[in-house]
Length: 147
Length: 127
Image (cartoon, rainbow over all chains, first blue to last red; front, top):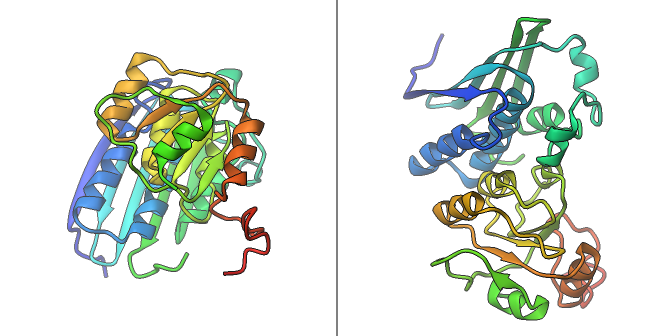
């Protein structure tokens, strides 16, 4: 049975916009902080969301990030229009990266983003179509305060 | 230890306006790679970095890091300072290398958030 949605927000992400990259995740963090989400859960959601947002900024043309809150969980959905990921298994390997020097100058592109999203999520799903885009779903269980 | 004490030890200058540096700091992460900063198990309280762009500030806001000290005399642009002020993250800059900065602060008993080795004064890490 689908759980009741308490809150739903949507944010646009522009590809290549390093200046504002991360702004949506900061907003998500502030929204969740205001409603009193546990600090450890808040940190995990914020880190996973920021890594996902920066992937859109670095690799895609544009994307939409959605925050969905239910009484049991926080879900972040990221849907981008971009080159897609040809080999997801390879992209999930720590250290694998196709980053450009510009991305590395910004402090990213070390091939740690997707593994770090997975580490911080309770459930992580990723689908990608080459030359179309990538869809990520990150779920963090509000009752799992130990990770 | 307080951030204003670290400022004196490193002879650092404060870059942000109207933000208190009377902040308790016990755990420090030092890296130019923001993915490393986002990868610690336990939250750090201070970032030491040579990466002086807005993503350093964003990374701290996301990871709950309270302040940044830029090493090697790096100073960010005005936009980044404004962003830090709006996020209430004080920015400081010192002229020491990353190695010297880490060494000095380690000698004062500060540690990495995920450290298994304790501090200089308590090398076993046991309480």
